[in-house]
Amino acid sequence: MSGRVGDLSPKQAEALEEFRERIQDVLPLLPAQHDHFLLRWLRGKSVTMVLIVCFHCICVQVIEKYLSGGMCGFDREGSPIWWDVIGPVDPKGLFLSASKQDFIKSKIRDCEMLQKECDLQSERLGRHVEAITMIYDCEGLGLKHLWKPAIETYGEILTMFEDNYPEGLKRLFVIKAPKLFPVAYNLVKHFLSEITRNKIIVLGANWQEVLLNYIDPEQLPAAYGGKLTDPDGDSRCRTKIHYAGTVPTSYYVRESVKVDYEQCLTVSRGSSQQLEYEILFPGCVLRWQFSSDGADIGFGVFMKGKIGERQNAGQMQEVVPSQRYNAHLVPEDGSLTCSEPGVCEYT
Image 1 (cartoon, rainbow, N blue to C red):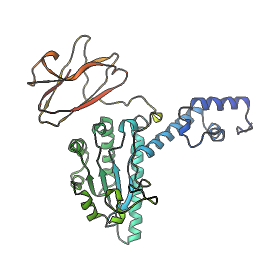
Image 2 (image 1 turned 30 degrees about the vertical axis):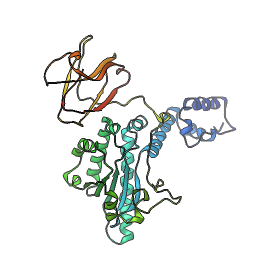
Image 3 (image 1 turned 45 degrees about the vertical axis):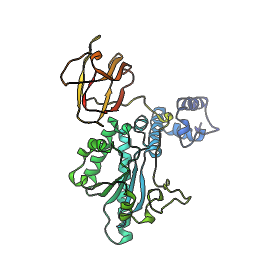
Image 4 (image 1 turned 120 degrees about the vertical axis):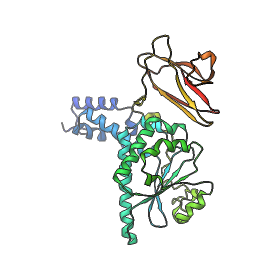
């Protein structure tokens, strides 16, 4: 039997049905769902390999659909403009649907595309174009974007860019930055060289006016103060810039993401451990991530007067009520913005 539709042996037909059953959760996400498409994979690959390929296709697809950004327009000197729209990005959903390597590969492809665009611009303009302008739209930047695995991966991407594309960045504009932006920047700035840090320009309320000093209105999306639109009139130019969104759980390929924790403690049954952190000024963000081994665990956040002073929970001000977490099943994470200085304690 040829293994094609209409020419299947009973064993081949059984294998096709088994394969369809095994991939039913991801079947709607594949390029095609008919027997012709599935049999192509069964003829050329083992079922295990097909499953790996299917999951890889889904990982690539979820990055393409739900990772924001895109090249749109050129600045007044002819350099390509890359946009990153931070707010709608769902870091945890992306990491539950794809691997860190998938993200890095995606960014390498973007960098290579931009490098090629610089070369094309050099040919078009008759002068050398070697660097890009970047614009970070930080509206909606929140605590979800400060998730440890996401920050670590973003740091690796920044390091990759610095190592492999020296002087590839002309300037980076940050627009619509919220109060949380300095916190986010402090988490990643050590990945950047001083030369690169000096190219970052955080704009204020007049950001549209400043952008127009560097970008012709015909090259700037109308939603950002220019005149550029998609053919259908979309002022956000969605055919060029992805605006991401929440990743549907149907894309998830894992239940949790492994986190490398900075500290490991042994807490005996019936006992407790207290970790102190001094809050120096209002507005500081306190973040926690933890998992346990073999059993659930109690956790709470309290405020007390002096650092180093041992107190029972009843003697301290309760900030996050103590409760039990199944952290041996699913890692727990959370955060709060501190309204006043003092000493916060994890118990």
